[in-house]
Length: 444
Picture 1: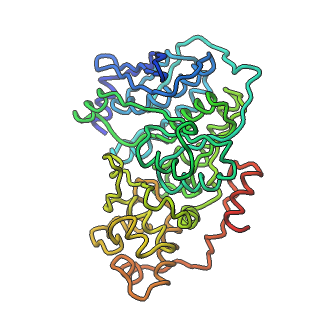
Picture 2: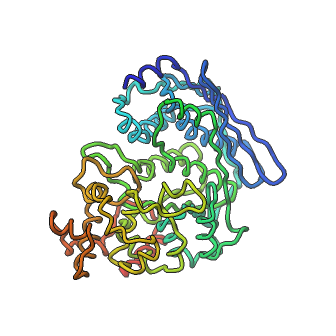
Picture 3: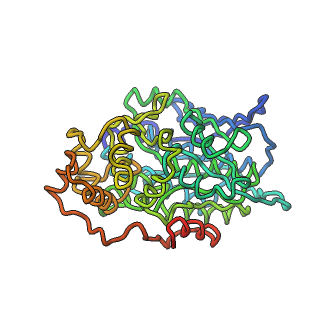
């Protein structure tokens, strides 16, 4: 908290100056310009396939920058944010202020910062008002499907395979894993739209120096970049793969949520914002919102062609090739949620070892089942479905590995009559044709 106050007093202003667009030989390079007076400039970039840029797409790029800036603002948590790059009215400012505050909930919590909504940031727009509209004859069709390399987006690819001709895969910073998932699903280069995102090295240097660092709402950045790419590709639907489990907070009694920008609340806020201020026939929603992580694991267990390809470990993603580190909450969670369907030989073949035998994962295990101080700050499922998956696996086995025996000996098993396999979350934004796909997958 002392560092927070010191930095925001010393560097009290953060400015979104503008952005530049360069038409390169095969790509379009977008460079954002952020400035912290008396400290540094930040110039992160995006590169996308070369395409036609109009005034409306420039407005969408401006909005991408509004989400990109939070990764740089967090270093100093400056009191004042000045927007020079484009126009925002008071209602728009309030949308971004809410996104920033709750999207940084984990960062504030882990850095022991007691930030207050009313005064953590004062946003001022000094750009003149604009009225930028999409072309009047603009028509959209088909689906843009973001791919992250994990089980969830692969389930979406499989559920949408009957609409293959209408689908385009969307990947930010493609790696071998994400490209392989698209390839196995049948998508070749011409059906994949990629974006290269580069972080400014000045931010990495400030992190080394001890400026404030932590989690930011990356999924919100995905939302605005995917909307831009849907517009450039004239796609009608952006099909996310965020499950109902994303709505659960990591700290009981609060809205602190590692997955805030994957929640139904953010999805609705984003849709309301884009409908009012963009007014284009592009719809952003999660196809998997009706499902729990358990149900997604159940479906994914059937798609064996992805089992030796997919990866979800954030630790392992920092190197190439992407791998399972087998020591983090995400690895253990994925192992647990797939265990009722694939334990033991198939899971060990995927991960390289039996994570249920690792005594050093006991504390992480306790957090995942809901008996720790917080839920791990990773994209993991609810306590209920983790315990349900464990109970299902335990009930199948005679000889229990270390973590399953520990669970059975020390905690109450979950009621398997909950029948999570058939649950359907009605809080979703699916149109009837997409609901039909999801219900068919559950044999409704």
